[in-house]
Image 1: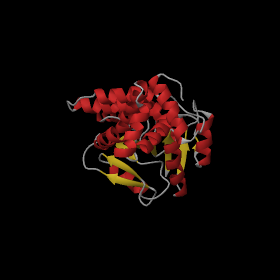
Image 2 (image 1 turned 90 degrees about the vertical axis):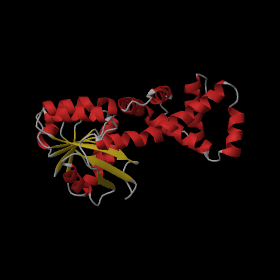
Image 3 (image 1 turned 60 degrees about the horizontal axis):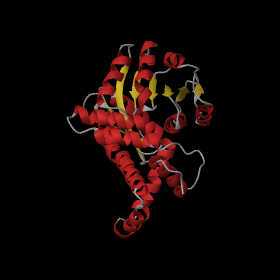
Image 4 (image 1 turned 180 degrees about the vertical axis):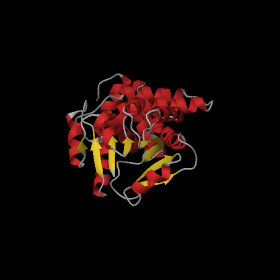
Length: 281
């Protein structure tokens, strides 16, 4: 099959690579993308279609794996291009946004399949799952059967897979934000060392989780701002408090980005310095 991948970041490039290994032709669109994205795409064996519109004109299936805040814009571009194949929106968005994505691509003639990815970029079988919902979910699952990206078809209409992704990330990434904010507050109040010592006694391993959270936030937190906002919208739609994840969005927005490749502890210091408004020690 000819499968378009929009846009091949770390996750998208890994998925594109497994598609090419299965003998599919995987396309990407270089227009407006960075040099780093181009390197990832070429390394994964993706062919450059040039623009999203050109990609839509060639592909039978399009897989959208992009930051959540641009998911709807990408869908509108594909819908305007008159794409008539399977459109898999595998972004971290709320069910409401998933429905808007579906409307945008269906207006152009596409069949919408809702998706949610849980796990790291697929490299080892069993590590990462692609949850799918919608009438054509089984057709998409067939593409990924036997690959490192395990497909799971959920009963229900588009929006169900996104709801699961939102519920899962509400805890995993939300708790990471809480952990970083807690440690930053302790620093601001001058009790950070005492808190660290207490954690070593009563919560062993928590400091290690904080270091991992900081590393992830420095690397990918800019993408998680939109994801936290989508989770907040999901909770609000269920008449649940949304303030925690709105705050988590702010935490990740303030965390900054670390391009130094520094060890975990140094990254934690950088992130805490940004959150607490003080320079790293």
